[in-house]
Image (cartoon, rainbow, N blue to C red; front, top):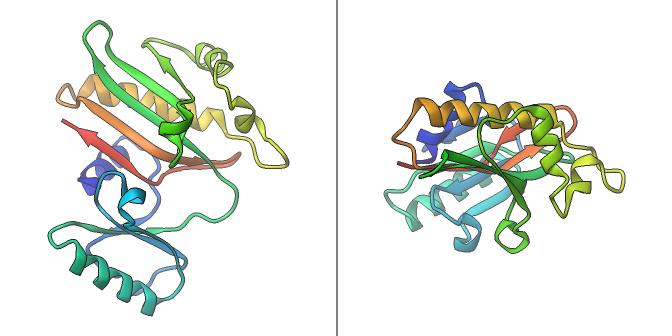
Length: 195
């Protein structure tokens, strides 16, 4: 499930943080994140951050495999530093073929409900103008000495979402949450796909 969506995103040159599925690689840079491939991972307690050595990695991997047999175990490079968590999504629509959602992401997405809807076809100026509708827009522009979001990278990912939706009519929904971005780079950390 997660592996499939990560591969799809990589095929469209959307940057996905380094990951491994159902294996504990020997030559890995720590820290890493270990998680079980489930929806709403945080609520299920299946995300382990700050795994800092190989012994802890093997232990966590074995623990999750035992508790969740048949589920993929994902190991990811853990991003360090200041990043902004965003949500980028696409959903089929009866009127517009599909719509794009963009907003503040992470574990508080459902509580904050701070997003905008983009209806194709839009350009970068439309995107930047609509960002003004976000309640927490200041986060994107560098709040309290935190880095600003590179909106060029974000706009590029949103455009690639449009291409994915146009070229894959079997996709009903596609979502990245979070897309971790700062002023220099952005990476997919988690995603879901519904066909």
